[in-house]
Image: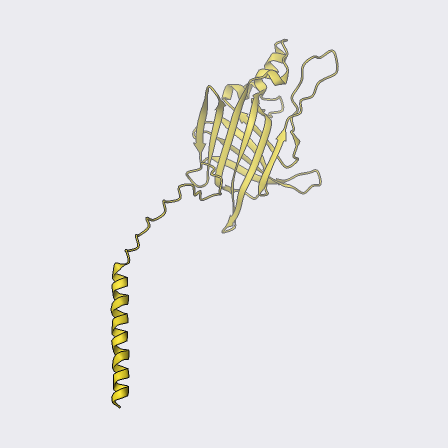
Amino acid sequence: MKKYAKIFGLMIAALCIASMVFSACRKEMPPVPELPPPPPDTTYDEYNGDSTGIAINDSILVIFGDSTGNLRWSTLEYESHIEVDSFGTHLEWIFIDAHVPGKEYPSFSLKILKEEGDHTGYMNPSRPPMPVQYSMPVPSLTGDAKCGSLYYFSSDSAANALRMTDGLQLGDWWPWELTTSVLKIDYVEGQMLLTGRCIARMFNYLEWISAQQNGSPINVEDASEKELRISFGGLRINRN
């Protein structure tokens, strides 16, 4: 009995010593430093991964200009509707017309596909038969048939100068190259919401046509150019 008591005593003593050694080692370990929280993500955009620059939902931002400066305007005033083409492709197009708040001009008229994705078209100018020596613009873009179209009206005087006898009003700036991007189409409470943008290299059609009318024709390639960027976020599209 004394033998077992002695063994148990030794075991208890060993456990006490081990506990003391473990506690001492634990006290000697340096504290783990707290890591700082990660910086906030400032690249987040509520519409898409590639920011449209839109700050207000259901609005449009327009930047029109060149290296010498640009005109920037935004609006909540626009008209929209959807049409199915008449060429048997059954493609649905969204038409958006918008203008500076409180004025009729500047304004633009955009035709964009009702489908998420990017599409690029460009103008392939025509060259009339001899003896005409200058190139002419064509009203529709070549390249991607899903690109759509875009016309810009810079002022009322320019728009009036290009008003046709049948009442049709032509934009004074036409696209040399146009990329349309539908980034998101949402349906909320039966309402279609469209988010996207378009980037275009525009040429001054009024400058070109005026030169022809004045007897000093120029190639369409020689008309002045400007860049046009249009972004829109959460536009409520009229489906009728």
